Length: 286
Image 1 (cartoon, rainbow, N blue to C red):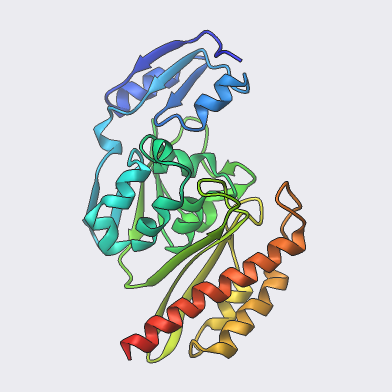
Image 2 (cartoon, one colour):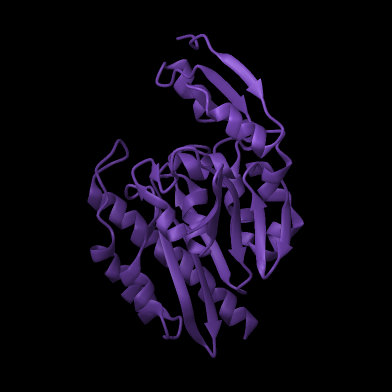
């Protein structure tokens, strides 16, 4: 199908954006990796596309106040290459090559991925695992929403009408992190995935966050599996306990990839792979 007829306007400041989006039928576009597909299938018919890619307040990667700040217009490819991201949030560096294909990574933005909130996407799970804060902006001011509260349901977020994602802030917490997923082909959405972050203090696990994607209506922070690791040595017994806890943590829907039990099985496999990877790192460091 062809796109519907529409207008186009490029804005260069937040003030100009608020004025433009006040017009009926306005729709924001940045990387456009989701929006362009919905236009082609007539799932979206905006009156005017508002191009925000020239707004400087939404760009840049920096470290300030004990946090890594990533502007919403940062492209997936930039996440994979940026030195500050690699130093302070290597989980995002590791996740970037898993996102779709190079053409999409070169255009898609972190803000767009988080706002769309696809339950099989890597970046929403990563920012929950990293205990990040989503910084939003609107004509009335700024809000700061913990990532764990940002994703509210299938393709839904805590964004209010007239509000956009301005940046993501990730605390500099000295975590170990890893991401793994199972997909049918390179570039496909994950059948199941796990983004994990934790610390090892005095030989014991501290502040573990196991966040699964592709197994629910959004990123799923596995409370039971995370609790099974807290304060324990990272060993075969604690890993098995975390895997067992997933029976209560995860309630995946059946989808085109397979039934719920298959997804639970994949989640258990990924848990073993990721945690055994941390265990190997610990043994090498010792």
